[in-house]
Amino acid sequence: MDGTERVRNTILGKATDRQPIYGWLSANLTDELTEAYGSVAAFEDRYEFDMAHIFGGPGAYRKEVLERVRAENGELTPDLLLNEEIFTDPDDPGAYEDMREAIAFHKKRGRFCYVQTPGFFEPFNDVFGIENQLLYLALYPDELDELYARQAEWTVRFADHAIALGADMIHLSDDWGAQKDLLFNPRTWWEIIYPHMKRVVDHVHSRGCFASLHSDGCIAKVTDGVEKLGIDLVHPWQESAGMSYDLYLEKYRDSFAILGGICIQTVLGLVGRDELEKEIRRVFGLLRGKRWICCTTHFVQKHCTIGDLTFAYDLIYKLARE
Image (tube, rainbow, N blue to C red; front, top):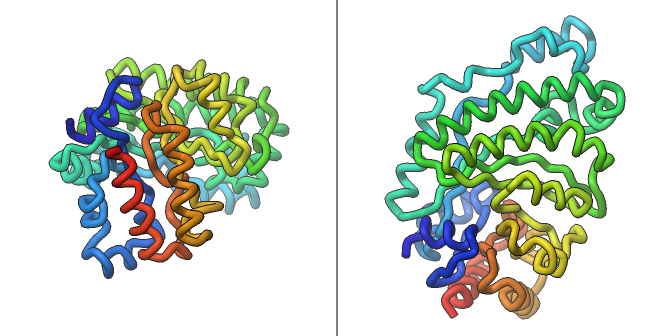
């Protein structure tokens, strides 16, 4: 059983030969991993990672248009963008060459490849700033609804290209949670995020591909909605933000899989190795054999030493095979 089959079976709740493993490593530790192992890829090969998180393809927004509108108006609000061509061309084949190469590289290793693409609230934070967009959800709900609809159509076309290149899953990144609650009213989520997310998820499923969600923080107030969306996998199911594994196991274990379990906010690189081992064993004790892929809850942070990372993955490698 290779990584692709192992992860697919885990997502579907079918039997596997072992627990799949992965980790978000490269953003902060590329230099350190390269010095210690020769490359990030060498570390991934050493621990027989089952997945690959693929970035690439065109960026969604025409930055020159956004800058022009801001300069002309002294501000950038949703209403000012409705008559502008702010999205790039998602059908430019040359924009996907990096994605093509990455998928080919990891498929040679038998890995399940998931391609990241924008959600709705999170990417427009880059356009407006998060504080402004939270305000605009109240002041410009209809205008944001229209912009999110256009984002959905762009994402559908992006997803088609990623799937054609061999993506096994489209990963919608859309941070909705703070440490203890949603960043906005659940009614807002249902009214102007859910319909557009549903449009993308349904399209991805129609292409025979999985759809996953990344959202940091506590999203407990809309997890029924995540289930209704038909999302196949959620990352990270952040226990440190109040998303208990009991809630997942009691209510959602038959609806979707989870990716995560190794907390970069409270554990990895932050506690001694005795406590690190105890925590990893605790999570395996709760989730082993379930629809769970062992992974970090986000990118491993700079303060994590290569020694601690190696210790963690030596243990994860062992426990995944028990």
